[in-house]
Length: 461
Image (cartoon, rainbow, N blue to C red; front, side, top):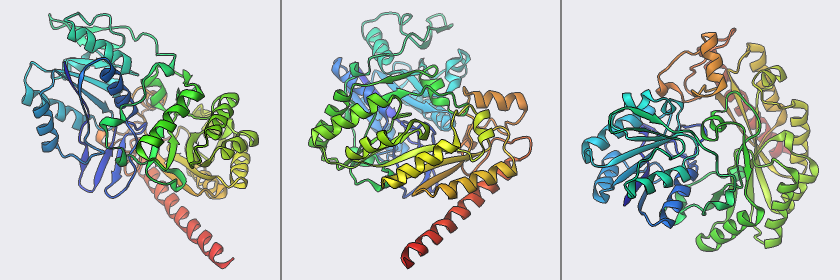
């Protein structure tokens, strides 16, 4: 059986889309180097490869493949089954790609959809989008393998976990989600041999290229209302980890095979479980990799001992999500983050010479002009090496989206508007969508002035 896995084209004039591999699908300006690694697709490819399926894995976004060239490649491969990873922000384009696929290849090919879009979990999705045959909800790799084995062997897929499909009589079947794969070491390493690895770039602190993206865990035990990823892909707040040995085996092998000069842990939250995190750092150090690396982390889960262990193993940069300078807003958003602890952790991070990137957003429930100013002041006071200001994006399936619907604060249901930067699809009791866009712009200006003064002070010293 021939299987075509794809992150289909998604772009607009001057911008390219970031879909597969991103917890926040959005547009980046052309010329930007940022490109997350599509872990779900790459793990799926490895599972299918090992099971004997004939594969084509196409990341049209990373490889800058336009729609016509993409469909020419699809037609030439002549697959039996196509799998597309889609997202909420790209949904309108995704459905157009789906329609063109069906028109090109006809009814014989089977089309499967997966990814972080809540609407797919409802049976009426397949009724409204008749070009698709199957939907896999949540973490899909092993379930996709299960489905394809059933199709290959001519069996009914009514036991495939997390599958929504059309029965022969036209009715829609919804299979129970099933359990997540608890043993992450059971996953083969991503099928990187099928991909253009030099295209993938996420290098906090400017760690050198080419840089490997890897994960040591999945999920997050915290309950931030705005984070749809754990709720959509993992069905809740589960947290699973790989063994330090398996993680470092993968890094060591990839460095030797592909010549990576750094690596980045793109975990949802890397630093959960101090004992495991320090053990992983020790494993990296003991292998003598001697490469700089970076992580995505929570500031309140760090302490000096952990940071020192990570630095001794080569950690040079990290990302902390702060989100707001108002403790009240963080509490309302169920972030569970103490701003005093953030300040202390940032101080230690700076003292150790570790570069840090911070993220903030405007538009959480209760946002006012005053709380937005607090966020700008907090961001500047923490003096990061780099930062990100965005506008809160209420992806369907998140508690944030539910809250906005209940309050009447959702401004748009057109998913093209859900970019979290140029547009605001949210308002608060005190602020309009235009206010939030203005405040984000003012934050960017304040940050630019802060950097200018910082550079001038360094030059003068």
